[in-house]
Image (spheres, rainbow, N blue to C red):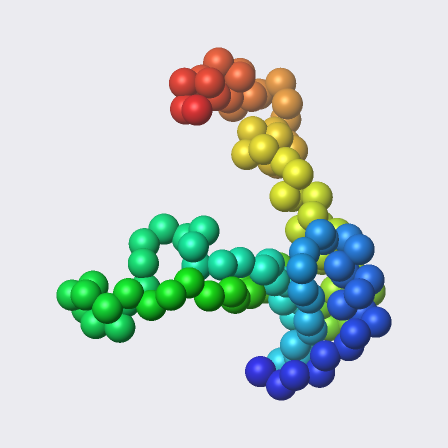
Length: 120
């Protein structure tokens, strides 16, 4: 990916999505929002070792866990995509499922209401 970081745009996106870092990458004609969270390996499960037998553990270190969460061809599209990502993060699977059912009076709705708690 080519790096076309736009500090002003990533700052706007960080106000929408609470994260420790944000950057924009562009490839080839689409922008991608990459967010990051400061982490330390002591908070992760397992232990890094220099050998596969696990005899030589590596001391813990800080790192940034990054993921791509939004995209758009324009700045406006990228911001709208970031807002949608944030909105979806605040939903349960049940809420998302209900939002995507076309007919709320359908048998699907009844089945979801009746059996949802059996699945949880």
